[in-house]
Length: 123
Image (cartoon, rainbow, N blue to C red; front, top):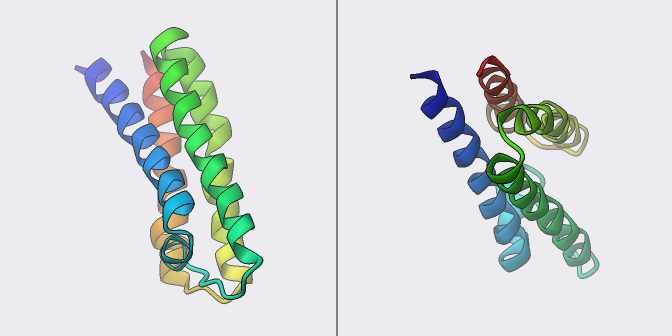
């Protein structure tokens, strides 16, 4: 029973971050507003694209690890990659975003990623 839940959560999280990366590449300003820090100015698009590539890469690496290396490798990946949404929490707070976005989206995501790592380690 635990295996489908652990794998399912990991797949959903990896697909979700892949989606977010694509959104930052295709709709950077809208994605930035959803992230919690609206962006203005012409030069910002490059930085938003960097975030899009980073997030899409995380999603693809996570899926590849799950498919080809197994649950333990994916668990270590999830444990390490949880640093990104924890960092995003701080970035949103330091740049005028709301606490609701910082904690309700980014911090909560980090906790779910850590839960996923724990489930995968338990297999």
